[in-house]
Amino acid sequence: MTNERLRRSPDFRAPRHSSPAGGDLLLFLAEALRTFHDTGALAPSGPELVNALAVPVTSRPNRPISVLEVGAGTGVVTRRLAQVLRPGDRLHVVEANPRFAERLRDDPVLAARHPGVGLRLSACRVEELPEDGSQRYDVIVSGLPFTNFDPAQVRDILELYLRLLAPGGELTYFGYLGTTTARTLTASPRRGVRHRAVVRLLRRFEAAYGLGERTVWRNVPPARAYLLRAPGGRETWTPAGSVAAAPPGATSEASATGKATEQPTGGSTGESTNGTASGAR
Image (cartoon, rainbow, N blue to C red):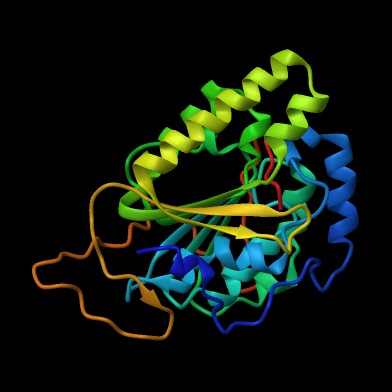
């Protein structure tokens, strides 16, 4: 596994910045201006960044998988995932912002996903998900704005991701370029120190578990996507639609479905809590 996986552009319909219902960009901007600390951006991710974040789902084991998306925002990545997931796959979307969560519940693209793809929506912070060991994910796609958080909170979330991932499961997240310089020039000294501490924490995490990264210049603002793998299993992950045999002696981790509620094609359920941390998409 190298950076080549992140550079590949799978042949699927490009995601949209807005759902067919429209208004996503305006909603995102309104929420960013209202709660920038939790939203972390002024616009949803562009198509190239979305493609990079979805790599573990478009290049995957040849079996049903369970996917967790954290910080879905208005759903630009969520809709991409819904396009490429196969019957038998499950998608659990976590979005703490109640306005974003309500938009996701009514999204027609998610409602029209492939039959047999389970969808669950939790309106809470990822830290508030129950941890009973029954639910493990093959893929986690994170849109949380880590550099807006305190180092201790970022460390707790990263450790939670590792616990939630199945052995050998993969994680993607991203960061915007130039944020350290911008914070140094514009933020208070205290915030600058906090920001640099988070960046160092992320770099150590990437050094320990990283598979590759991709710089996406055609994003607003430019961003870098990271691909990481949890310790454990070593299944062969191949492009969607192809079949590859596992290496001799390799074992396949069963796709953990836990207690996620599979929804009818027409919609999803919400779990309301008082969480506030939202994603950057």
